[in-house]
Amino acid sequence: MDNRFSDNSQIAVVSTFSQLIGINFQGDMNAVCWYRNLVGDFAEIVSKLQLKEDLTEVSMEDLYALQLSEEGRMAREIILSDFRLLTDSGASPALNLLKSYQRDEELDFISTDVYSFHVDRSPIGTDTFLCTYHGAASEIVANHQVEQKILIPEIRQKLKELYDGADADFEAFLIEHYFDLHYQPKPGARPVNLGLGHLWRLAVDHREKQTLPCIHRAPIEKNGEYRLLLIC
Image (tube, rainbow, N blue to C red):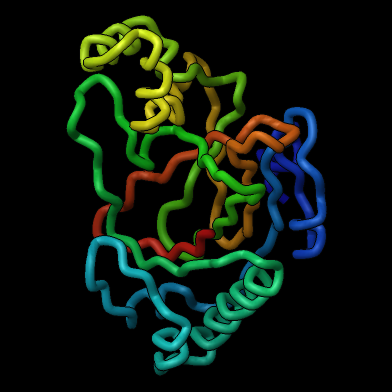
């Protein structure tokens, strides 16, 4: 097992799906990893799927329709099984074939796209699930190793210059435009790569949560290689 996971107080490592969804976040722990060594040829699936946009959602019908080798069929059955497990637990998984996400290039002093370390916010009590089957994998970082971007003086000052409204409404402006969800790693921060094949559950920003939300980011994609990602 990867010591980056088992020796990290932020991460709980489990060996079954029931443990993945059943364990409670507490203390510094806001990420759960169902650690797996998957078999099957996920690259074959990627090679036979059609990228229609930079991010294409793959239906289970499209996945079923692929003509695959035995290794490819093994990989497909793992994806289908993950979908069944998550759907039966009340989640709404999506399978994405991904060339790249849209970049936020509007402001040069703060980024609010998924390549920036950020947390997910939800109005209901839920969690984020993700698994990278192929391609570059996402990263998480401990909460004490980052600083909220809106609290960095030079960034906050530029946001105030951008804002055109009453001082009392400035915090609401930051929330409305999702600036408050993004974080800057401190010097010496040590992000953890989530690896391939492991199914993760990450805490989100919600008023009923008992722990801090998990800070994560999408990776820069490898040149010429698509990602195959389950997320919900």
